[in-house]
Amino acid sequence: MDAATRTLTDFGLTVKESKVYREILRHDVTSPYELARTTKIPRTTVYEIIMSLSLRCLIELERSDGLSKQQTRVKARNPSVLRSILWRRRDEMWKLESDLLGILPELKGDFHKAEANADFRFFPGIEGAREVYFGAEADGSDVPQIGWDYQTPMDAFGRQPIVRDVQEAIRVKMKLTHKPRELIPNQPWSRHVMTYEYGVNPLYIKATEYRYVNDPHWDLKQRITVKGNTIRIMCIEENETWGLIIRSQSFTKSLESLFNLMWVSAVPVTEEVVRSWGENQLLKADKRK
Image 1: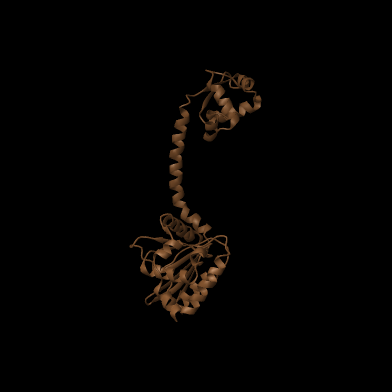
Image 2: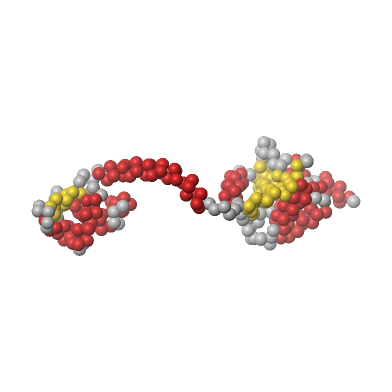
């Protein structure tokens, strides 16, 4: 299919209509008989095609006596009419879009039923934060997971539960095909947690792919994880403690796009980076006991 035929079919003509139309353009005046002979398209089909082209205002038809099809004279209009038709269609489409905007609320009211297609569950207090936090760590499904982590303080839920949870999470994550990816702020607290956990178990930075955002304006106060269509948000900030679980495909996509935007400019947390932050003094004190 050449460029002209392809464009004409995009315009709305069939391949046979394009062929007949282009043949008509080559003559001042022609007839259905001549068109059938030169295009090798059956005459009955040619009659249907020239009627269609006429209705589209691409050609003009004249009959000497108004009775005999064989005496029909076929003449092309200036091909510039194609552009005029296209502009007219544009005007019609703008009007149609305006009309659609007027009825879309009614149509969407029929489409969006009363049933919930997203789920938001709020868990108040420290127990709510605990449920959301440990629920995320216990999920061992091999589905890509992303998140923002401000490094949960050990005293939030008790030191031993968090230590056990971190070590179990490392064991589970090391078996996954898709290692979780997390963004952390480059601040003293994050560096403290990373050096402590790395000192306890070097696999900490292998079980999860960490990158840090080197911008002092980014001050993260919640832990946010996204896995599948589920978003878990946990907050333990001074007197504000709560957890939130959201199941929403559209919100998930928004957070994924935001995460990927930040990820490409963030700095990978490697063993060399963690070692450059120095020895963790809390871990050092623990080892003296």
